[in-house]
Length: 255
Image 1 (spheres, one colour):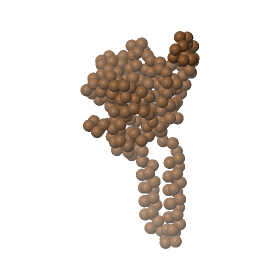
Image 2 (cartoon, helix red, strand yellow):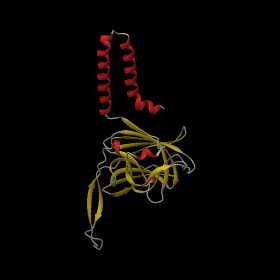
Image 3 (tube, one colour):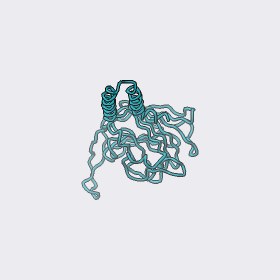
Image 4 (cartoon, one colour):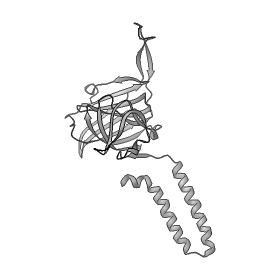
């Protein structure tokens, strides 16, 4: 109900305005009633157009029905799981990203998750399915990934101080809060009201270097630099192969 009201409060306001204006018109003389009715229609139309054109500053996706997949782009399995009443992400090498926040830069993200097998990958600042940052939540910690032109740069949790004090359980739901501001990402994980984790990770800057061969039989290779450009981009999820996780109640808020 909280997010329903937040999303449709403008529509409720317009409806209330129209009702009050209509009631007021009945108290006026008949000649004035027609003029006031036209004014009510015109003002309501202008307000509706303004709020429809204005870009939203938040999106809430419950993942409680199959239709919640309509605004997502990707390949693999990302769909409603009826037995769990949420979405399952698995067998998706590229991942899935939300199409309505592709131009966003600084934002907060929150969602609930449960690891079924191995991990859950959280995509951030996704320009497209080949360029993004990803935080892979394992039971023992978080492994940051950077994907540039389809190539991967992976960091281990212990090397970037993102190991958990206690391992996550495969039998529990957890809540994750992410705050992306400039080149820094704050990560918080909760078990109900208990805070389990609160750390920061900085997105690498500069270039990533990949080996390039003219053909697969060529023994020589050259290194080609690709710049990391993740200043804006959308949110999503990725689990490759047999990795499986459940997600629900995703909230994206522009900072």
